[in-house]
Picture (tube, rainbow, N blue to C red):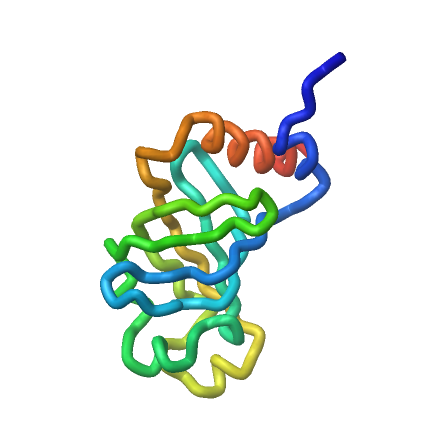
Length: 136
């Protein structure tokens, strides 16, 4: 009998749901939810839709201020808390500090690197989920 893994159970999805993206520097919720849309080793692409951004946070900060920020993420689909650092912001879909943009269905992609303290098993799960997506 073959042992079932978490990544086997997630093989039919194109993303992993994240709840509450929290920035460590100010302990504020940056976004109430987000989606992991790609993974490669310890690197992930986190997609946040404008309507999920904390309006209070975005009023006082720019998206670029997230670069080098340490984040806490709860990956709902895996029941897993992880820490990561923001490496890069891909902002071409979300005009900066625009009230109209926050009301529209724009998104921003954020490249993050998982903490090196995360066990290799979980890194492999991320890679497995998105490798299956790429192969489909």
